[in-house]
Length: 145
Image (tube, rainbow, N blue to C red; front, side, top):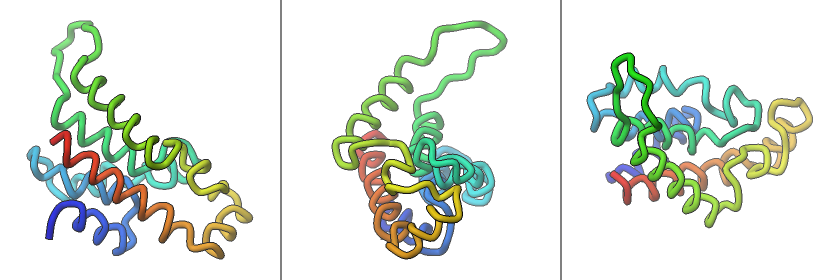
């Protein structure tokens, strides 16, 4: 099983989109699957189901940080150009497939409301739209890692 399939399998086991991405890739960088599931737990549904940045994207950003991020000990320094560069390129590739990185725009509803949640359930949006977002995120990350 490859990592794209692993991320999809994780999502199918009812982990959120962010957990599915981060827990697939974090072990490569010394962060356990269990730790990564905890770290990413509040990022699903566009960050705590608020419909903001898609959890598959935030999971990818955390993974990009693990791969390209830097640690600066107490010194003020400009942002890590490589992690920013890769994250921006990730956004470009993700939006070329999905048009946006905003959860509620991807879903066409706000899952933070009872009506939106019902609409998403009635139209199987979590299984279709979110699954596509997880797959796209994992496929793009494969090229950067």
